[in-house]
Image 1 (cartoon, each protein chain N blue to C red):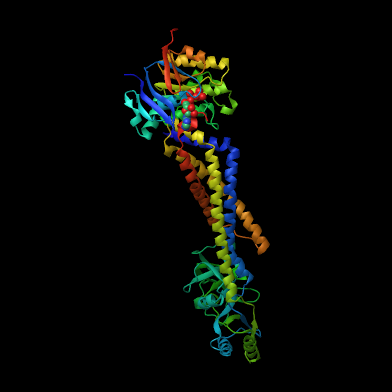
Image 2 (image 1 turned 90 degrees about the vertical axis):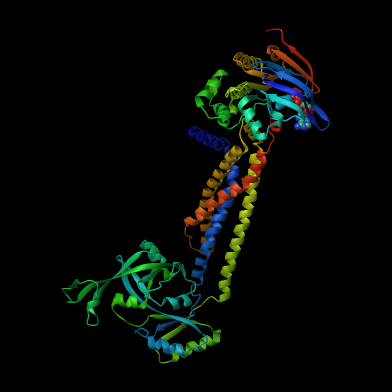
Length: 401
Length: 222
Ligand SMILES: Nc1ncnc2c1ncn2[C@@H]1O[C@H](COP(=O)(O)OP(=O)(O)OP(=O)(O)O)[C@@H](O)[C@H]1O
Ligand SMILES: [Mg+2]
């Protein structure tokens, strides 16, 4: 039956090529729906990312930084926090920054406690998961992209350490120690293997860092020291916050505390509502597309009633006719979906550039979903007109009206 | 056994009796012309003979089988296997070439065979037009494609409703020649026509008026 499958597709191809103007009308309806759908999908996925980069400091609203060259010690943090009323303190995260290299690319690593970071930076969007133990890292999206790292990748941080008295050389992973002939300083290569548990996606500068636990950072640098900044979340009115900050700044501590703007909870709600709105619009567009495609298909099939009658006279069973017209419909849906998805990407890009002044990432999932949905919708929309058309009485159609 | 028998067949539309107690027997290899004024029930009778339509009362017996008792599916198979149609209008699928239009009939009947379809077109003198679309063919050529399609599955009966209705003299003669050839090969033909010339070449002429057979005569020429 190979030649007959061939003839089946030969008919469908002929129909597509020789009834071009009809096809174009049908496919236009699908393309419009699919492009709006894929555009909305992309924006839907990208809005949270875009929004959180707009309101980057959602979460923490105070930053402690050292007021001298020194870093901030654990003790000064504890003392500064004691100046904040217990109830008002929502969370805090000390950060320690170091320079390192991953696969020969210089990157900045940030040592954090992930539990508290998730509280002070609730807007962080992570593909994968937070590190759950030492030996796991969270990699900023930019770094991940440059190094082609994905969730589950194994990476190694390399550090060239200067051998000083403070360093416990027995912990160095490489035995090769080399000496600079001019200065007489000794160096050794040291390396730490880590597993990527997640990729951090915020739309901001966080994407340029690699995050690991304090103990991994200490092991990598073989130095244990204080912190560079502390992000603090304080729940209070504006004037209370001013009081707290001035108390800390006037204390003898080595800390300068500054307020940063943060998004209130209700502003966070806006994001959810916006997403809900996009969702509703998407559903409405889907329904409209379906009606539009159904109308077009009804018209396209109605004008082929006599063809259907003829095919029945020639011995076609209902299911053969349904299969043929359905295949035509689904192929139209697929083609319309592909074209629409591409068009939708440009549409989303245009909207994003104008509203958020940043570009949107092409998501293959969205393209795939759009094509599938187009095929499905066209199939559903064609089903009723096809089922009706198949009922035609060939005697009536062919009687010469 | 006769090829086809109509026994007391009536077809009623509202209070119009389009066919009124018609009795007709068609023998194997016979060529019958059905004539009569417009509206006399010729197409209605053809549709019933061709299993496209069912009578309001009476029986249609095709090769000993009472088709008024068959299911729709069985009827579809019947007209697919036993009957070739040529319609009053040239019903071709407009996006398929002449050759493909003939192949559609093979496709639903059994299997497509491009060579065989080409041979059928050759029989109606259209070998060099095989790759043309219906819109690129003249009326006479389209009608001949319909005939090629009707004969492709070697039916025992070919039903033709006004096969020369829209044709000029030259094309009409060509169609008549094809019908003659088919008849000489043993195919039974039932041809509805207004055209006395077409009536003349048949073996037998049945005249209808107001749904009734008013005359049934053998032609004397053969
Ligand atoms: N589906 C129908 N519903 C109602 N009346 C019908 C229907 N089909 C045919 N008729 C009527 O039945 C009668 C016979 O119609 P038919 O088509 O058989 O005529 P005909 O002899 O083929 O005419 P023509 O030579 O013009 O083709 C006509 O009066 C017609 O109006
Ligand atoms: Mg008629």
